Image 1 (cartoon, rainbow, N blue to C red):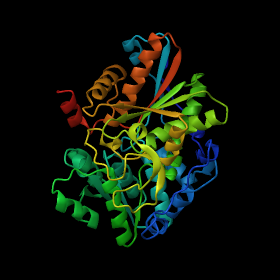
Image 2: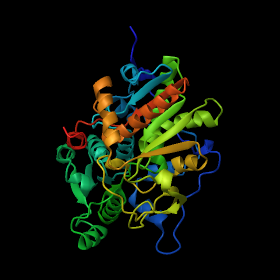
Image 3: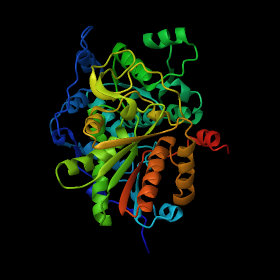
Image 4: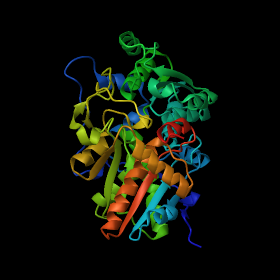
Length: 432
């Protein structure tokens, strides 16, 4: 029998997170203060989790995972399996290309976001905080933080991009079932939200706006602390658990990836799968390519500039060196709204600047993306999130090009989340 699933034993669960910063070809450009206004670094120190800020500037390659967090990971279903996509290979008629995918959808909330949510909730509780405040785009991060907060006995407040809040009623219920308070963003709960609603009562919102609201709300309310779900270094460090597991699983499969593909908005799931492999490559242990799949609604790695920019619309964060479209850029809402962010993570951006990471963007109508998700569902049997469909689309495209050229290639795709709460998007895009 040919086994499609490559599991990793629980006793092989990594004990350390990986930080690629020490292995980068050039030192990571540090955050900067803007020329005017109050110190943004001091603002974050008062607003965010101290341990996460400590990890943010860490120069250590390996960071210990507290035993309590490893136990939470196991409870949440880690290690997660790696799959060989044999049925998809057969459907595509591949003769030279092998396809694999990592199953990050197999979490209690249906996505990879739990990996950093559990860590941040644990550290916040250790620091005596009572409430986690955050933003969310597609809703996966808001769901994950709601879950983690409940496990740690904390409250959770979520500012959710209005364009998605309005149609994902079931995911809204999911968060509230976990005890979270969920606000559409922009909201009347913050100064920046009220200003935007005065200009446009039906403002669709964006991740940059929701980040601004979360930061403002956390800074003004006692016991609150802000948690970010993507972009920042500490988030990608926590997400490295994905790639670290996968490296070990490829050893068990006696195989090696030549290309790693993931969808990318801010960079958390792409960084989680890609950075541990990129570190192996930078240290001379592996030859591999990396491809980020994006939407033409927010192609930050393709049309963005590599420069310092704010992480939010209200300019409350320090300036970060990123590939950015501009923090006040208006971006068309899409069904895979988790990809609609103006900038890419500094760690991913540094690799993109060195052309180690490449990128492709798909049309904002998303037809070809949902077509790929349908093929994946009908062959491999898993209904994936719209964001994950971008990775599958890119993986299929790359596989077909390589196979037609007669090139032997192993492609790894990261499935960042499931699509069970995205049925309306499938019905809309596939006209079902």
